[in-house]
Image (cartoon, rainbow, N blue to C red; front, side, top):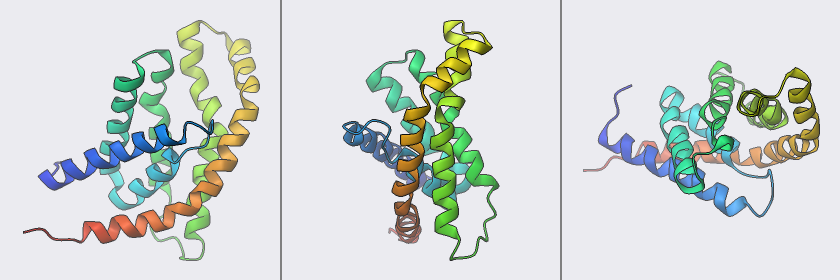
Length: 171
């Protein structure tokens, strides 16, 4: 996946947009645009969407500390990327926004479950402890999934904007 100079700059900025959106949205716990942006970036850039995703992950670690909470970030966003990658590219126009919103919501609903194995490994939880950790977080996962669904309304417009911007030629 060789990058052009332009792609390097664009992906760096898109990762910074992800991080900035997270900071701005921190006033509302578990409501953010990270999933929305990952879905949009993946639809437009496919495999190369991993660059802005991991730019975001690295920025999160740099500014908030590379602690135990950060370890799941190494894989949790890639799960959403992978879900989008397996969606058919030729989804009918009428269904496409709902499909993207649903995948984004699914990731939000499963966030705590996806996060749990790292927590179990880091803090020595057995299967029972991990299950208790997941159950305790279900209300937050509900908020996360529902908010991801409704924030997902922005996915189609972001995809359109990214595609338009990708077509701009510079001299």
